[in-house]
Each structure stands twice: as structure tokens, then as C-alpha cells.
Length: 128
Length: 191
Image (cartoon, one colour):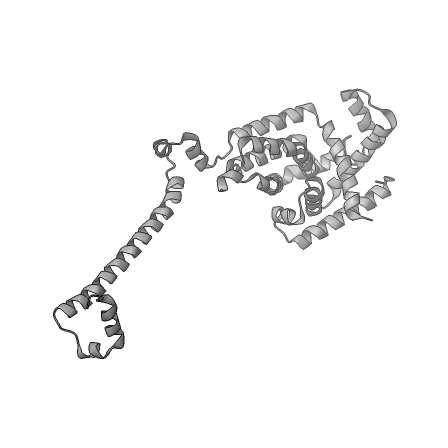
């Protein structure tokens, strides 16, 4: 026996039986459906789209969906700005140290043994 | 992105409309009582709408079946004694397993007027016998069979709705189909 084919024939017969459901039962099913629809849980973010206003959102008492969307973006931008600012500070500090050492003639003896340092001086002072 | 997949009231309405009659029949197969079956379907619809009304439409069949079966089980638990009496009394009523399909056909004709003779007679006889035999199936086999083949859910969805493994679903379906085939052919019905 082909199980699926047999089940399909049972299904066809059962479907015929659906037409014989009493009118009273059909009406109750319809009423139950309308009752259920009147109590359907709605996605709160639909409210945002529907009202298009943050004020209405807050008044409705559903600020969380908007915050959830906006907070990660703000956090990302803040992180990028802090990272950029910190790298700038670090770079300026390094430059300052070298410049002040050069100006005060306070370089350690090892600096004059460092070939890279001389190359850097030559590259950085083309007028010399 | 998530919003676009969530079901609208119209989608929920269409879904409920498409399943309500089968759900009613399923509940009838399980509890053998029209009023109780209607209450069960109404409860299941309400639970789906109230708790899962904002879920994607594709999840409705599995969720609804899960709720429906749980509501049927709740009904059994709440009214075990009443259910026992219903079953006992239905064994003596005229609309029971032993009823003559011809009698039911006559009743149908009284309600809806006469239909085409022989094919409809056979169809009604077959339907009555199939419904009787489905009622007799063990609950889990009946659930699996109806979800899989009447609700057109795949094995994974049926397993999720029943809270069992896919292997169990296949076993239940296979046993149910064979039991139905044996019972129907024993009563002279070939599909």
C-alpha cells in the first residue's frame, strides 16, 4: 500500500465532509474567529510606522522598540569617535616628545646610534 | 526586516477561516461532542490571536495545531469524568459508531434536500465510516495523521506541534494509515 496515496484519498473524503458541518456550528466558528481577531496581539513596532511620531510612541507607552533600534547605532558612532580621538591624541603625544627632545637637545646617546632616527631626521628636514 | 514578515489581521483572519472547519472536525473526532468541540476551537483561536497574533504567518499552522491539541488535552483533564460519560452515552446513542450510514444519509437529505443518488450515497457512507475509524485511532496516531495529511504540515512541523521526534511522527502516521486501511477494507470500503 502506498501510504501517502491512501492518506490523500482519506483526505479528499474528509474534505467532502467539511461541507456538511451544520449551519449553527459554522456561525459559531465565524463568531469565534471574529472574537479572536478582536484580541489579536499586535506587533508594537507597527505602531511606530502607523503614527510616525516619537511623541505618539512615548504616549502609547512603547518607547523600547525605537530605542532598541537607535541605541546600537549611537553606540557604534560613539565608539568610532572615541577610537579616532584616542589615536589622534597618541600620535600628537609621540610627535611632541620627539620635537621637544630635538629642541632641548636632550636626546639620549642611543638616539644617535639609531640609523632609523637619522633617516627620519633627513626625511623630515629636507631644507637641511 | 522582521516587521515585513509579521502577520497582519487579514492574514490571521484568512488563516483562521481556512482551518476552522477542519479544526472543528478534529476536535469532534477527539471529544465526540459538538458544543465541546466548538468551545475548544474558540479557545484555540483566542490563544493563537492573543499570544501569537504578532508572529509570522508561516508559523500559524504549527502554533495553532499545538494549541488545539493542548486545548483538547486540557479538556480531557478538566472533565475526565464528563468525558467518560460522554463516551459511554455515545455508545448507546443513534449517532454512534454502530449507526447505519444510511440513516445518517437520510438525515442529511432532510437538512439539505436530496442530492445526486448513488455516488453521494457511497461518498457519505465512506465519509461516515472514515470518521468513525479516525475517532477510534489512538490519540497520538490521530493527531499525527490529521496534521500530516489533512493539515498538510510536513514532518518537521508536525513533530514541533506534537512535541516529539520526526521519527515518532512517521511511525504514528504509518500506523494510523495502516490501521485505517485495515479497518476500512474490513468494512468493505476501498479507497
